[in-house]
Image: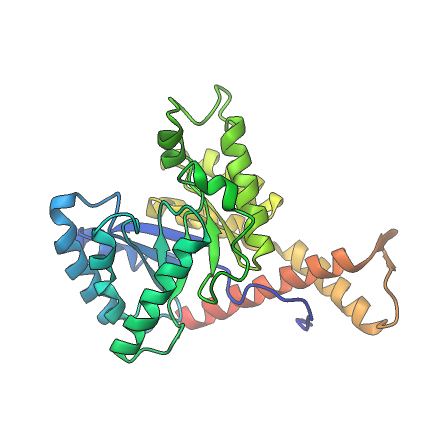
Length: 310
């Protein structure tokens, strides 16, 4: 397979990110056997306030006991920066998480603030500077919707943008975020579209939000397929049973890889041409970029599979 490409791409897109309550020992242990590309060890919504301190200790131990992250990345969702719990949550930095999922942001200033905190904490703990990434849940406040196009350049730690419809509905005083047919109401569809565009503008990964009914695998598959077609490259899971569906949906098919290989090889063999015919269709630079992205993603997935069987 010719995987040479020239366009800038996300280094390692995560297809599936599985939420795990930080205070639940059984779920923390069970999550290791899931096929999720990343775990999000949660200190926020899934943990009762009375157990947050315990969850911090458990998550820190979990991180320290699992330094090898080649197969599965370990992220931590902390509490919002507007709460006093957030700074206490950053005790987990000494366990070298791969990233921090930051909820209820208003805009890129929150990313810069957290990044400065991480600068100091990494130096304190002897960690490589800039190693810990940040991904905001970028649509959970009313103000945040007006900032989705402004994340470019806010921090070198920015790894992606994701969005959420549940907290946004609460912030707007809505009784529901979906219409009777199941599709998102207009403001939430807008939030999703702006998250996708904002992530792309910032050259980071766009990650789709949860599918709340973990028993409805077909509904998850349909929504994930629509999101991937639109341009999202991963999705958050709330239950281990959702992971395989998400991974399958956000992985290139054999037919896609075969097509992408032919396209890249054809342009490589004809470097002076900007437009090339293939199977009766004219292809140009957008098709080449799409093909390169498919091969890039397929190569990452293959490398993760090789790591998991060693």
